[in-house]
Image (cartoon, rainbow, N blue to C red; front, side, top):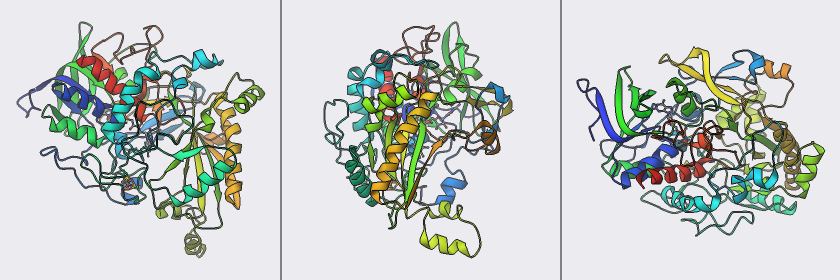
Length: 563
Ligand SMILES: Cc1cc2nc3c(=O)[nH]c(=O)nc-3n(C[C@H](O)[C@H](O)[C@H](O)COP(=O)(O)OP(=O)(O)OC[C@H]3O[C@@H](n4cnc5c(N)ncnc54)[C@H](O)[C@@H]3O)c2cc1C
Ligand code: SF4
């Protein structure tokens, strides 16, 4: 491989160039380098993860610091520098909001650095919703071209490679698996011991969430110490394996080079094939990176943006954007819950994913043939500075901080509801707004289907029941995006933007080039040496975090490349 050039050497060449160093890009880099391919991983964010001169050493830039991660955009993207725009539909004009929209870190390691890493597998039915349950008017529900049985070995390999702690026998609704998790589950959060007992009492089936955080020393990295800064923050001791383990292995192979602070501006093509990418480094210099294969792993919003910036013209690029429809059930308890200790979420339940008699009745009442919610996460808020922002200033403020009704007494549930694919929900290029480098930003157009609203109504009630059994003084539900009237949405612009970081579906996979952008291995129908290795390829959203599934699919796509 030619190394990244100094200024006098304009080109780099490699077997593959990978755009994005998040879980998807890291998984491809790992598989390709183990097969002896040379790869260049191009990442627009900064590097706080691995010493690139000596990849045996991890960096220790992360800390338990709310302001650094939540307010100063330590892991990016700073929405002033790299904004996105949002609207509910074309009737809103070009946009309603400019700033943060479903942001996932832009840094070496991508969203894996920030996530608290609940990594459940999908279930068998998640890949065949159309055949099992039938169509829903207004949505484009379809079967995946790959099924669970074919993906199972890749799930198992992904769990081994990133290190997942879990109990294979704990979830009665789990899909079959060929072996146990590599590690036992970590310690439960105190609040989760209470919420799981209450959930069981109302007939639910909570279990220890499979989590990509070491419960015991694993793969040369230490066990999690339950510092409580898991979600939205990097792990100070690298107990989270996704994707640092994959990236480190790829770099240690000697076949990979990682270029941080380098933005890929377009995929270069010639005679119906990609020849590499054009990239811009931190000081604005543009260079070309030539490669036999271009892998796009920029995430389900930036991958279609890059395709559109490259002039690709399949009508479905950016279409079918999905983001889990979140339903929150929350309440205050008379006693303290200590959610500042633990991995943000240690327990979950799957009951709301099932299409059971109850769900069918709720669907019928809403005029739908079926409905599905999603994984329900048990957790509480952990961060005192975020809490402080919620109370009024003045004499009451210190009293409220000491009593802590909105943090230490608050417990809640988040349902990551299945979001149906709709053609009108999409990512395209904003016609006017540009990022600091001068490129059109991604615009998200999104409105939930009435399926999501009905599922949220139905399952939200169950969450309140659990809170009542827990002994909550008061409880309530809310959703993201908000379910207010259009007028109120316009008044409160942040709540109209879905908060979920689970983004999917914008370059759907399938066998028919007319109804899908990429094939069953992620290769573009129109440009077979461009391979998508992130959740853009998802056909439906399931009700589970996308990361393990996208890593398994990325490994499978890379395996197809190396044969
Ligand atoms: C707080 C939080 C909690 C989460 N919790 C969970 C969870 O519990 N379970 C779960 O499954 N998922 C979770 N997620 C989502 C998870 O982070 C994503 O699913 C995952 O990171 C997606 O991986 P990816 O590789 O597809 O994309 P990303 O992680 O988004 O990585 C893409 C990378 O590409 C880079 N990039 C983009 N465009 C370009 C370009 N043009 N040139 C160069 N580089 C580019 C970006 O900077 C980024 O680093 C969470 C996310 C957050 C933020
Ligand atoms: S809770 Fe554990 S895995 Fe999460 S950041 Fe802290 S030490 Fe790391």
